[in-house]
Length: 114
Length: 113
Image 1 (cartoon, rainbow over the protein chains, first blue to last red):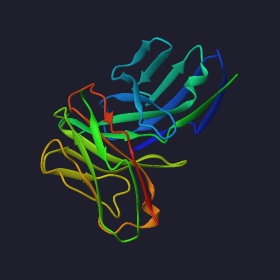
Image 2 (image 1 turned 90 degrees about the vertical axis):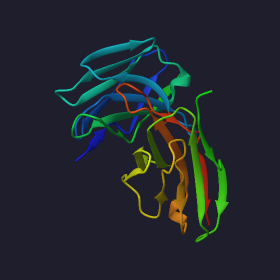
Image 3 (image 1 turned 90 degrees about the horizontal axis):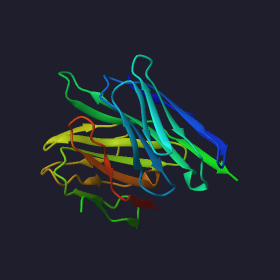
């Protein structure tokens, strides 16, 4: 089966660092994505990992461990505008190795307080 | 400009009146997908398509139909809408090669009364 788990809600303080975890069990693995979504708007792309390790992009970093089925998104120097939902998504791998379906977790709602 | 276009963006309709939400992309993407989003339930996949004439059910396909007759279009059809289909709908597309992210349309707010 397929399952992606992430915390439902998190709260953090402006200027702090927050880590949002994601664990997954899918039919094969062909990459993990993180998206940001503000209420009522379309998700926007944040990061992509396909190999183990850390990918850094400005205030945002994403880590992947394929053996553990685990990823996290790290947000540094939090700003009020970072209050949003953060979605973890996994691209499955079809039999034969081709790109499969993209499966989303339910998202983590992050609230940044002054 | 690369984009995914959904129409209508907002619609209020009545129970049982067939409707179609169109989705079109101009990026020659093979993969397209429909999601609905409801409070507390995240993005739930309705149907997806790996390429022309290839469609598969997602997690919540009941009450919906799709077609993929050409690469750029992936309409979502509600044959007999019911109030529990009131939701925010997103269409998305991507290339199938490794590393390519998915592009989302702006969303369609659908209310069935």
